[in-house]
Image (cartoon, rainbow, N blue to C red; front, side, top):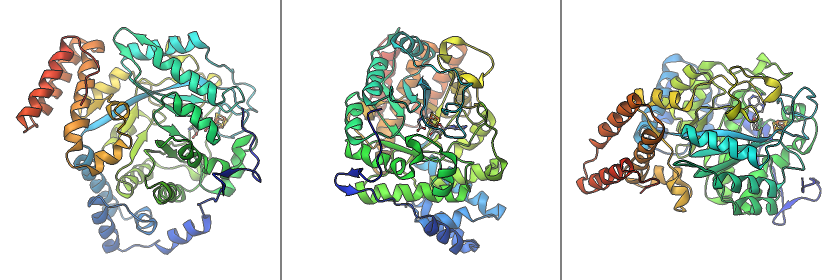
Length: 477
Ligand code: SAM
Ligand code: SF4
């Protein structure tokens, strides 16, 4: 990799990197709010429902709420806020692992350098084409490319692989948005990657607790907590204003991690006047040579609660829930504020063309629990009245920060997001669905059309749907 991190030398635009996470401060806030009264909890819920960002103290009040009745009220509020603000859309994507070489030694990851059992592979051009064709043939329009950290996977390599993906077109299929989950780069590196036309650049801090961080990241660039923590600041500096943060739950106390995520959001809002685009909160899974330590395991109940808390605390940010979770948990948690899920996920290297029944952990990063096809995931959503969406319109119209707009611009969802979700769903139904699923899908579209009172707009939408039936593609508002 072109970057050799030197903590003494590295500065962002001549400003020294100042870590903005203070463990003591976070624990002080958690402890100061450790026995909230029902009145306090309800006041915070009311503020969240009013679409106001919650402070660290207010979030700590929700995090420390254990009374079952009040927790149900938090969940009900998150459900209401999601429905009120975002409606019933769920954006679908798939991960594509480009290379699993890695110089780091993250104890929990199958790709760690000390794991000699892991079969190492980097996709060549034809491999990328084959994987993307398979993904497009399943109906995908949005991918996240995933990379280990290795000198081979420098900024140029990442940019080249993004361009390769955009070039692949199979039948009516194409990938319209490529997001990235890769190692932090330097500012110059981000500029190169931005040029390739990426959507979001995701970096998960894994744990915001520095002591724990240092215990689980044993070698390579990733062992430097501050370098990683400021990774997305450099992305902003390099012109990537669409970033995703995350914490790997199970390394440390989840309550601390939720506060860390929120502190990270506060930092972004304070410095760049815009928060991150997405937040991820994967629960740690078994991996080749790694068993999950139960000490900090997050129960299903706490997991649901923390999703609801994040929804209320950061109402304008997209929340991502991946196939690490089993199907039943995903279905259950969806309603508390999730905006994006993956479908038809396969994280084995070249996995989209190998069609293996069972996971082989020596060929992949960790265990996943939801092995359903994209179609199965879609049709479950449809059955529950959700609108699966492959929309990429904002990104391609340069309307960045779409979650923020959805949230803050009155009528934005009705005029853009919802109709675009219906249009991309119609494309899916035309190109990839069985006759039965097509009937179910179009029924959902009809039901949603009935909600449009603006007849002029409705007729435009109906017209575009008809054009899609007639073979037109990629129509959006
Ligand atoms: N190598 C880059 C990095 O570490 O930032 C990017 C890709 S890494 C393959 C993507 C994410 O997978 C990591 O940030 C981590 O949160 C997650 N991950 C790693 N091991 C995991 C495990 N055992 N269970 C669940 N998620 C895991
Ligand atoms: Fe490498 Fe990322 Fe895995 Fe760490 S989490 S070992 S950096 S692939």
